[in-house]
Amino acid sequence: MSVITIEGRLGAGAPDLGRIVARELGLDFIDRLLLADIAKRVGSTMSALSDQESRVPTLPNRFAQSIQRMLHRSAVAGMGGDPYFGPGIEHLLARPYSEMEEPPHTNAEEIDEQHFIDTAIEVITDLAEIGNVVILGRGGAAILRDNPKVLRVGVVAKLEDRASRVQQQMRLTSVEEAASTIEHTDKAQHRYFERAFESSPIDPFLYHFMWNTSDVSLEYAAQVTVDAAKVMSDKGLKWKDQTVASAPNSTSE
Image 1 (tube, rainbow, N blue to C red):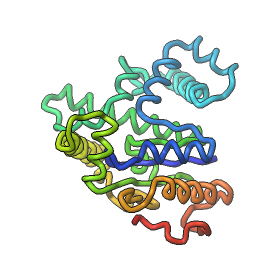
Image 2 (image 1 turned 180 degrees about the vertical axis):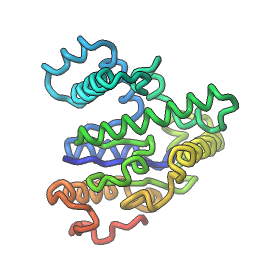
Image 3 (image 1 turned 90 degrees about the vertical axis):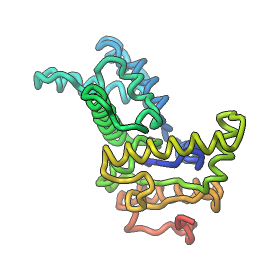
């Protein structure tokens, strides 16, 4: 069973890296939009969740079964307020980092922010238990840092390279506009990590390795990541106990 988290700065190429790794290993690639879509499609009624169990165990179905178990557990314990099942859960899971740039100004905003953090932690933890996933963002490395079976990867790049990629992907009118978008997103991402984990998204101690995609191609980064994941999966041991023969220079640069 493979679980990989990939956390990257906007424009550094983390989504592309994650998709390549997921494709090479035959894993499910999970980003915030897919999480929201899963929650919207399978979180509606108990009958819908029960129906999912008879189908092919794709990730949405496996995730649905996890939600169903949580519902039963909450009912038995007599507890309410599970973060999964509050109003508009699909919108909560789709929430971008940019919405957390500024600290909350009211108690309601603070509660909403904590709800977002709690939900992210619970969802990422459940996905890791389901396994065979590449999880993009949401602080997966920080949430799962004590899980020895999870390979944690960070992605950074030089500002000019990030701005060029963001301008192209978001079809912005100028590099300056892209750089401004990056500045705001970095600030929000940092505040999220500080608020939720008392850490930073570029803290090297959160990751087994951190790729600088200004100096290393996504293809090479993906291949080393795939090799490392295979070692963890095949040997069933912590990655630090093994070596990756095909990647003697698999450092962050």
